[in-house]
Image (cartoon, rainbow, N blue to C red; front, side, top):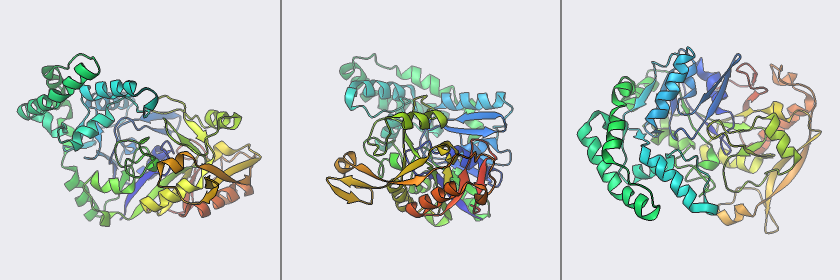
Length: 427
């Protein structure tokens, strides 16, 4: 049975939650492998809408075990609040497992995130201000706090003291902020121990054993390929690796155990935050996409920037992730356009470029080269098979598949759980 990675093939917000949820009934484990509560998924089940920020989407599937891997950074207050909210709505969250090696977001991480972004002014990155970047920075600097540390008061106190020795100097002398008391942080983190103890496990061992036993394991990335800290539009990126390789380092499952890598691709393009965006629309078409698509960040509440589909980005995502399939979402949003432009290449300094430029300077100056495809006006939300789509919608999907370099195996034709056309099985 397969181990699958499911990730965003653009700048995030592609509809990964729906794709994960679609597979949830056939999957034994759904694993978040990176990011924190800066990533949001919206899942619609019947007439109920669920906004998930830190929890894997599989938590909504009764037979599925949701797992938070070691590559995730966890804000314990946010996690417990999210669990409480789902419990209040009748969702059983008792099967959740959390890696003891996952790092914690502490109060000083969120404080530093906000004051640093404010200090940058016009040069700001556009972070969510939730402490994600500072928590990952501490992880790399080897002064991070891990989930397992809250069960040993002595170790926890030593680590918090070591972290705040430097950070309080920065807060007080650089940002003119009040120093953070060690005891206050230690007491807050110790207070989560009893509430989290039942969820903590050796998830690396558990997941490897599950795959060896023939269980279906789905690795769920947050954000998207172009926000990857190594392979994205640096520095306008997240602080972790949403790309397929991150599934291995973020869970402790080796690459030879991954059978399939599925890229979630929106039928147009969006991004949140600062940074280059070649196909961005600052006109009525952009406003129309934003309104019809409900393009507002699940976690941030910020309006998303909207643009036409970018095949250059899709090809890049196929290459760096080794994608085997695409799940195309929100095709229904494009209903009503007479003609639909698609970016097939860029013009940079008067030259055509067919692949994503590695140079930050070149990408900032990239101008989209469009091909225009015929649109459709028919309602597609009731379509149950590819043949039931309007001919022009079929042509649009086929053109995107050819340009992107991997087969489109499923198509989202509406926000509901059942508003999906399955062309090829992912399992």
